[in-house]
Length: 95
Image (cartoon, rainbow, N blue to C red; front, side, top):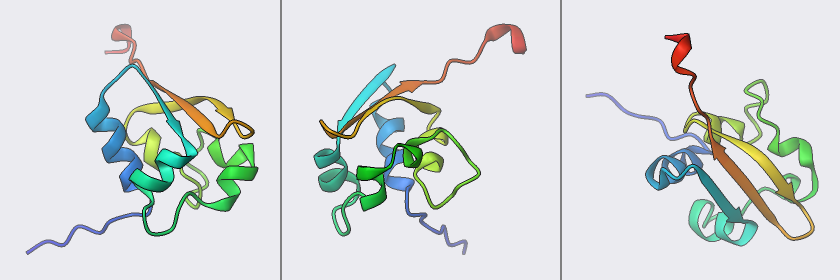
Protein backbone atom coordinates (compact mmCIF):
# COMPACT_ATOMS: atom_id res chain seq x y z
CA UNK A 1 0.00 0.00 0.00
CA UNK A 2 1.50 3.31 -1.02
CA UNK A 3 0.95 6.48 0.97
CA UNK A 4 0.83 9.80 -0.86
CA UNK A 5 2.17 12.64 1.20
CA UNK A 6 0.29 15.91 0.88
CA UNK A 7 2.46 18.97 0.53
CA UNK A 8 1.56 22.38 1.89
CA UNK A 9 0.78 23.93 -1.50
CA UNK A 10 -0.88 20.94 -3.19
CA UNK A 11 -4.21 22.77 -2.87
CA UNK A 12 -2.99 25.43 -5.28
CA UNK A 13 -1.86 22.76 -7.76
CA UNK A 14 -5.17 20.90 -7.63
CA UNK A 15 -7.24 24.08 -7.90
CA UNK A 16 -5.35 25.40 -10.93
CA UNK A 17 -5.32 22.02 -12.69
CA UNK A 18 -9.07 21.61 -12.21
CA UNK A 19 -9.75 25.19 -13.34
CA UNK A 20 -7.79 24.68 -16.55
CA UNK A 21 -8.30 28.26 -17.75
CA UNK A 22 -5.62 30.12 -19.69
CA UNK A 23 -5.68 32.82 -16.99
CA UNK A 24 -6.83 32.51 -13.38
CA UNK A 25 -7.21 35.39 -10.93
CA UNK A 26 -7.50 34.66 -7.22
CA UNK A 27 -7.99 37.09 -4.37
CA UNK A 28 -6.20 36.57 -1.10
CA UNK A 29 -9.62 35.89 0.48
CA UNK A 30 -10.17 33.07 -2.01
CA UNK A 31 -6.77 31.64 -1.06
CA UNK A 32 -7.82 31.78 2.60
CA UNK A 33 -11.22 30.19 2.08
CA UNK A 34 -10.52 27.68 -0.70
CA UNK A 35 -6.88 26.72 -0.42
CA UNK A 36 -5.83 27.38 3.16
CA UNK A 37 -9.01 27.03 5.23
CA UNK A 38 -7.11 26.03 8.38
CA UNK A 39 -4.23 28.47 8.32
CA UNK A 40 -4.97 31.17 5.76
CA UNK A 41 -2.52 32.48 3.20
CA UNK A 42 0.92 32.92 4.80
CA UNK A 43 1.53 36.43 6.11
CA UNK A 44 4.70 36.75 4.01
CA UNK A 45 2.58 36.22 0.87
CA UNK A 46 0.50 39.25 1.85
CA UNK A 47 3.54 41.46 2.39
CA UNK A 48 6.39 40.28 0.15
CA UNK A 49 6.31 40.15 -3.65
CA UNK A 50 9.23 37.68 -3.56
CA UNK A 51 6.89 35.04 -2.12
CA UNK A 52 5.11 35.02 -5.48
CA UNK A 53 8.27 34.51 -7.57
CA UNK A 54 8.11 31.70 -10.12
CA UNK A 55 11.06 29.96 -8.49
CA UNK A 56 11.40 26.28 -7.55
CA UNK A 57 14.45 27.01 -5.40
CA UNK A 58 12.38 28.17 -2.43
CA UNK A 59 9.97 25.37 -1.46
CA UNK A 60 8.80 27.32 1.59
CA UNK A 61 7.07 29.69 -0.82
CA UNK A 62 4.14 28.78 -3.03
CA UNK A 63 5.85 28.42 -6.43
CA UNK A 64 5.74 24.62 -6.31
CA UNK A 65 1.96 24.84 -6.20
CA UNK A 66 1.40 26.82 -9.37
CA UNK A 67 4.46 25.66 -11.34
CA UNK A 68 3.46 22.01 -10.82
CA UNK A 69 0.07 22.91 -12.30
CA UNK A 70 1.83 24.49 -15.33
CA UNK A 71 0.95 28.06 -14.37
CA UNK A 72 3.08 31.10 -13.62
CA UNK A 73 2.37 34.26 -11.68
CA UNK A 74 2.12 37.23 -14.04
CA UNK A 75 0.70 39.88 -11.71
CA UNK A 76 0.45 40.43 -7.96
CA UNK A 77 -1.26 43.35 -6.28
CA UNK A 78 -0.51 43.38 -2.55
CA UNK A 79 -2.68 46.47 -1.94
CA UNK A 80 -5.78 45.08 -3.66
CA UNK A 81 -4.89 41.53 -2.55
CA UNK A 82 -5.03 39.48 -5.72
CA UNK A 83 -2.77 37.41 -7.96
CA UNK A 84 -3.06 36.52 -11.64
CA UNK A 85 -1.77 33.22 -13.04
CA UNK A 86 -1.26 32.40 -16.72
CA UNK A 87 -1.10 28.88 -18.10
CA UNK A 88 2.39 28.03 -19.34
CA UNK A 89 2.37 27.35 -23.05
CA UNK A 90 4.75 24.73 -24.42
CA UNK A 91 6.19 25.56 -27.78
CA UNK A 92 5.43 22.79 -30.29
CA UNK A 93 8.82 23.24 -31.99
CA UNK A 94 10.56 21.94 -28.86
CA UNK A 95 9.21 18.43 -29.45
